[in-house]
Image 1 (cartoon, one colour):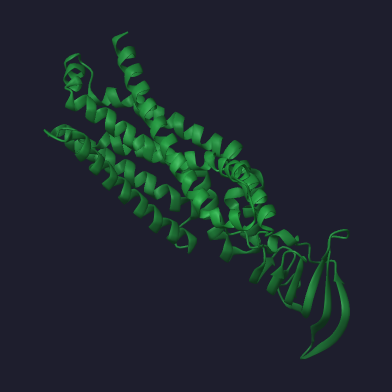
Image 2 (image 1 turned 90 degrees about the vertical axis):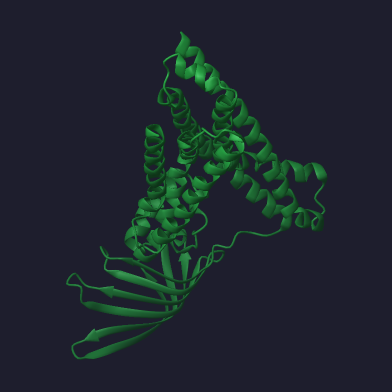
Length: 363
């Protein structure tokens, strides 16, 4: 009964502080978003109510951005307050160790991380996409899915496609080269075309002004074809789009299937796409990491307990974000596996925090 009262007091105190901080930070972020788009709203004669309704769509994303640092502050504030007011002495004298005191907070971090993932997938991403569409309609602009110097290969079907430019609006490839191999991996033909237009009804690409080079013995046969419809290439136009910044806004199932497809078609671009995908999946662990950091800091300062504890927590949090930035860059370049780019900072912080906690307990 005594332990239940302590757990309830600790968790409720942390939740109240964290929610208040997250809401305040969310309002600040929404204000930043409003002022960042204020010039665009004024140029397109968007009213105050309409502008505020568009900005409100950003609230779930802003709340998720703020929730990690908010719990870092809340846990640090609660534990430092218990030390400064000598409440921690009463807890320790009652036979409750520091580990038992912070254990419910760690469990709370796991629950908050799960909430973060669910809210992001079910609310934040759909509203973010809705905000993007509304903004584009107001400003008469559209997202550009054009791509340059794109190369896709389907080794099972024995061909590779290179295009100097892909126009997403026209679903057209320009400066196209298609290389086809036979079952023995020998060159069968090479096709150079001015452009290739996708036919959505037939799901085929039509090459225009095409030159087909076919090796025959020691010579090469060259054929010019004004319009060539290829039944071999089965690649959808969406695969040629520049989606480097869209993985985080796709539905989770579609993003997973898209990355799986691109792993075989575009191995060079797979690392960047997969890194963004795993960053989206594992990014929900940020509140848990922030809470672990706050629980590992010493609160045995004689004066200014809150100040020094917050400084210590922020220093470790900065290390976490710096390590994360470096590992994400390495994952983007394919130096390490995409999943490791997001996991390594989490593991590093947990190891450092556990070691720090063990060292402080011995002092």
